[in-house]
Image (cartoon, rainbow, N blue to C red; front, side, top):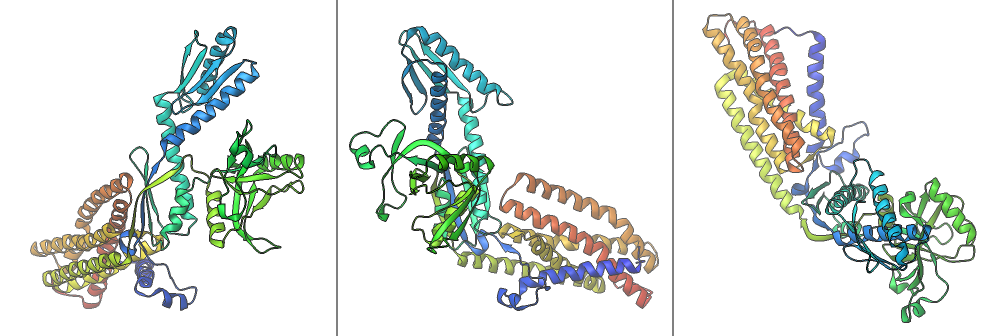
Amino acid sequence: MLYFAKWKIILIVTISVLGILLALPNAISTKTLDALPQWVPKQQINLGLDLQGGSHMLLSMETDALLKDKLESLRGDLRRQFRENKIGYTGLKATKSHVRVKIRNPEDFDKALTMVKSMRQALQSSVLGGASDFDFNVEADSATGVIVATPSKLAISQRLKSAMDASIETVGRRINNLGTTEPIIQRQGLNRIIVQVPGLDDPQQLKNLLGATAKLEFRMVDQSMSAQQALSSRPPAGSEVLPSVNPNDGFGPYLIKKRVIVSGEELVDSQASFDGQTNEPVVTFRFNSAGATRFAKITRDNVGRPFAIVLDNKVISAPVIQTAITGGSGQISGSFTVAETVNLSILLRSGALPAPLEIIEERTVGPSLGADSIASGKIASVIGLAAVVIFILISYGLFGVFANIALAVNIALIIGTLSLLQATLTLPGIAGIVLTIGMAVDANVLIFERIREEIRSGKTPIAAIDVGYSRALSTILDANITTFIAAFILFSLGSGPVRGFSVTLSIGIVTSVFTAFTLTRLLVSMWVKHKRPSSIPI
């Protein structure tokens, strides 16, 4: 156990030195690091919200809007089916909870009812597993000719779940596009999302990104009458009046056809840019192949007519189609600032939310609170480290020096690994490091006590050291594996700071075993080889 091949010595020293080098950037200011050569390690540990400040928001999904969209979609499907089957109807409308329609001709009532039920079965069978968010119940009154379609409770629940999953993914993409590190995005309850973004110095930008649904649509402008005429009388069927996204630009409102030519779902990319002629900030976009084909056909058939770019039911701009746009790309202009084009490009690139999110709680954590937390964590770490170092020195003398050297390398390996992985350090993470300091010497204590027992039994110093390390190994592995299992469960089932604690604890377990059983043993081996002791100062 005390013999080390040269390659093992080189490997142990290399790992230890590499850990120290990776940990060093955390003790150097960012300005100094930037001035160093490129090959020098510069990665630092990311600090969490509780250490460096940032924004905390609690979002709530507007479930009424979600159900309204579903009911409007169902109403559109029913209208199309009635027209295809040449069934006369009236009063087809979507309320807050159901879709209602009245069949004009009593002779068509049974045919219409059968068609609606068949439509329900077809929608169910099109989704693996049967009932889904397409499922609805059908009620009919033959005396009045009224048919009512109501989404089932299971359908509403499934729709809410899928919308929440999609919202969390979309929110994640938007925040990641901001360039922040390690944001925390997690679901709370049925319809709420917690968002924590460490280090964000512009919470208003975050609010603008999360508060926008980003539902982009390209529609034609209705020129049959002006928007003012439509407001004073009644918009034509299939059209609606929409305001301008910037009411102070001198344009709008607009009379827009409800039919969507191309939707934002068919965008594959969007970037903030500048117009080549006017040099004004614009947003460039690119469609997928299907969207490009449809957009090319619409623009080819409507040259000379205006079309509207609509975002969240507000018109960004309504340019006139000068020529067919066949390249599948274009740009959006509208008296934007540079910051507005950046936000808009992020919104379009990350996709639309399935329903609006309302900010019901907002907190900004200042860096002063983080500074206090870091200072407290440092004090706790220093006190814990000093207590352990003194205890080991008093208890084990020279072997305690070896253990303390290994402890210092162990801490460097933990910090270096966290820096390499770009992990986020939070207050619970600091607690994990402090806990690891205490655990790091546990293996050495087991080994040293075993060596003492072997010496008492009459073994020679070298034999006692060799047997002490050999017999303590299984105990050390058992103790650390059980702790590692607990840390793994915390990481699997926990979230946010709990995961941060489990990560630092897991890394500490691995580095502790390495330094206690490998590095310390190497130091003892070198001492034995050099001194050839007749007794052990332990």
